[in-house]
View 1 (cartoon, rainbow, N blue to C red):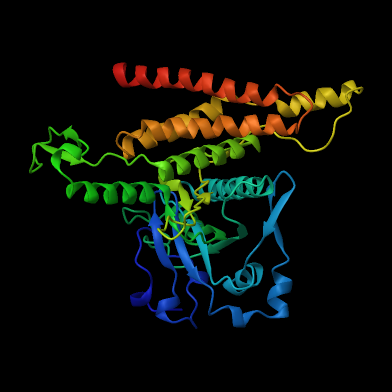
View 2 (view 1 turned 30 degrees about the vertical axis):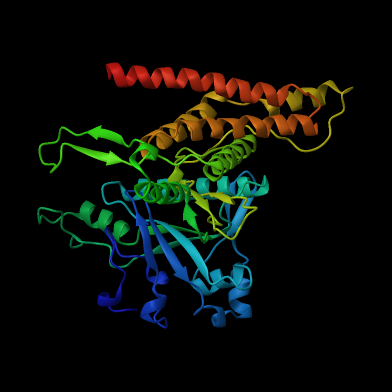
Length: 403
């Protein structure tokens, strides 16, 4: 094992010992990308493990974990197996670690951690099968950290001896972290892209005459500890590129909803842009990727595959059952995205409208392609979601006004 001085710094329990390879140098240790109350995200360097791939590790990598709905993912025991499951030439991967929570009962903690990790993997694989751009799933591992116990076994927190406390602590000390290994997406977030575009536009405007400058949005702050009574917030740049990103985002979200996945945390920080805009690229098309499906859930898909016999009433009943959808879940998903835009990117209303335009256009394209026999289905889906979005907005405004 690595010495404690070389372990990556993080809050909570130390990372699983399997992530810390004793043969790796300090530069190839996992790097903490982000951490929340539920999970930590690590960036892994697989270059040191490619040479460790043997027929034994490849055979061990054939063990699978069922995540539900007949979907299975590889079960990993060590990082050399991960290196054998990724595509050739891939040297980086993401590990999302749901670490143990000491405030939960150990058995409940293990159950929640495993079920949530499987649900996230299931939604990712469902999106991948439906052609939605999202990280590829490499595998799942349940790894323990032997250093996770800050109370002596056989004593409770007050120092009293207790056999029950000993049993709980012994379970807690071996409570595993659930690690979901995914594809590393290189690029920037949509939030970073929009902020960078706005900052660049602002710097250009500073060199222009005052009459050509756009007015900045003033936000009043009543906090007594602030050094200034107001601050200038740079307005979001609206041009052909940012509108194209917004429309592409709307299409991507519509495609995700069509395959029966609700993201649950749609923000501009949870959408990656693989190919940031460059001055040399005149025919630029943004490649967006949805990430962080930790709060995602499954619903009835709108798109179904296969042909139906119109003369068979049984097939028609099955088709109607598959085509049922819940506009409430989709509308709430869109409302979260709308609030994220308006709160993070000032004066981005035009971008939000472009997102809705891309969302509706995707369903109209499906209708024009004639994927289903019922030509009015997709128009009905988009209209019902937009109508329900208005109702969700009204509930949100009422909650803001009356609490």
